[in-house]
Image (cartoon, rainbow over all chains, first blue to last red; front, side, top):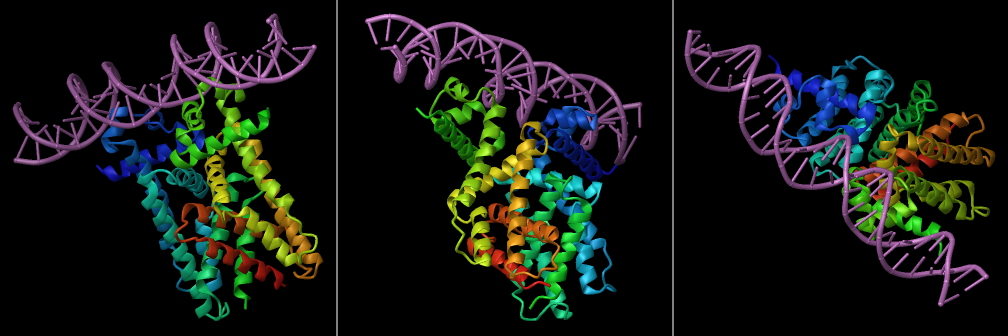
Length: 195
Length: 195
DNA sequence: GCCATAATAGCACAAATGTGCTATAAAAGG
DNA sequence: CCTTTTATAGCACATTTGTGCTATTATGGC
């Protein structure tokens, strides 16, 4: 049988505990109970708690990466492609909202937990690189002005995306799906017309 | 003697523990040890741990609010005023970086801790309202186009600020002070010239 | 100086935690 | 059918935690 699928299922049990009770309640016992198995069984798949946390954080990254890579953007207009890709990162539905909440909790812990440092950096570099490629694409296609400082615009775009993600997670009543999507579209509009 | 100042000092001890060891290690004992006092003394000022956490989160908000209100912007050009105010929120020096790290940790917990919900909302509304007023100011002064959707621009501006804050805290080697400041300036430039 | 009140110290206790460890059940390979 | 992994279960133990509680020391008002 597929042990990797099993591990992903257990990591998702951890996600549920984190979202319902918080990371501070995500003990080995609580996660095992959530998954409906014993402590011993859980520890058969993750020898230590750090291992489980790291796997769960990596899973967040991989899920997002998978969704992005699954998109076929070859026939899209650059502006539309950019919006489509970035909407895949923002928490605009239940699945992505779950990932974003877990990401926020784990990012907070990654500030002080050496085990998560590498994953935190990887996650930042992945999305920052994606934004950079999108900016380049818009410039090359002529949608955005050629004189742009692409690095600056990439960090700005990434800040918009992460800021929106945080707001959508922290204050969903105000930062609604529609508002978040509209703000992203607005920024991309400005980027296209910018000198 | 001033009991409020004492409480602030103890909350700052909590900040130090959060920054050094993480929120999950911020136990009553550890905070008391950091402050150099006994558990009993700490509990004389904060009857429960929730009380201490809430006070520490409120202190983050009040410190930022105090810095902003202390600014005298009456004689500033609107664009300069906006940049000055927002730079006061971003973690561009040691003191503000400390506040931002604590804010990130407590915001993560606020997702599941009812005690912090009101403070989380208050913090969002405060900064969102600030961004809204800045946008209005730019529009009224003629720096930004009058046809703007002020609500949309306010949320966008707030997303930029919070996204930059997160990046500066999570990845300071890449999101350096200079880069963060430049990105903020770039966005304000775009806002001023936007149709 | 007296005394109420504030301040500090720290013990006690039940609850929870991570992990080392052993024991049983299931599956797989030959 | 037997044996060797693999999977599951859960106990044991030392630590840590939050808070109730009592005891001791300072401090101020009068």
